[in-house]
Image (cartoon, rainbow, N blue to C red; front, side, top):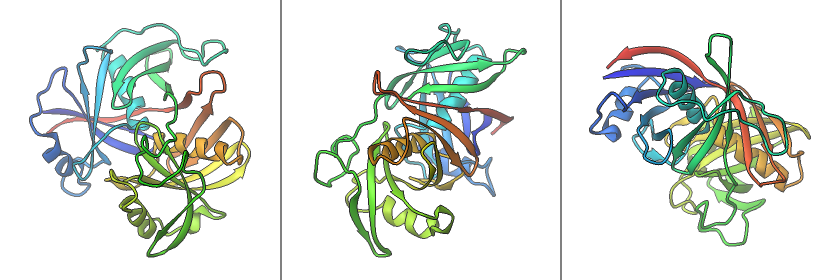
Length: 290
């Protein structure tokens, strides 16, 4: 089986092109191929599949074999792969609402969060350098996240774990996120707090966990414990959720820069259509045969 190793800001996955390859049991393969000592190594396995309703379909399997609904960094890499490998033609230029086109190419990709439009900026060699993803509308109701916590929205709600009591805001970007603001994100014991919050009983499908330090009204410092994978260098859907949480709690403006251990993402929650937009790089590392 041929594979491609790619990453978005260090959030790395093993990608398999199911337009050409066959894979019977991705749940069993994901933990083995993701192992950083005895496998290819990565935060999980992503399948690039044919789609009857879009240019391609993305399926994500975490490093523990569980299937995730959505991955923002992974989607940027899928877009790069689909475009550069000629699996689908561009649908034309891409623009944010009310603005001039910012990308010279675009695709429609099927995800666990529906069909998402992605814009691609290419260089002189027609290689994708930056990808802008229309992440759709954030979902804020407990049922959509999902969580058993009560209320219209889970904004700065108290949660208790053995390590202490915390205030969190919950957002779904097609997958669940818990955002906790702190004055010093570097001091957070993420390896200890992350799994306790991920598996809290109030999250029936578990959750991604993000600790966020607000640097100013246009910049966030983010650290992530990713559901099913542990500490990751970046989480695209998580960065979007952090921006939404910061705006909901009046900590930042509608456009901000998310600083993650692996690099930066441009984030915008549009007034005009309520969609969140995420822009960042996608990098192919190497190809191989498993």
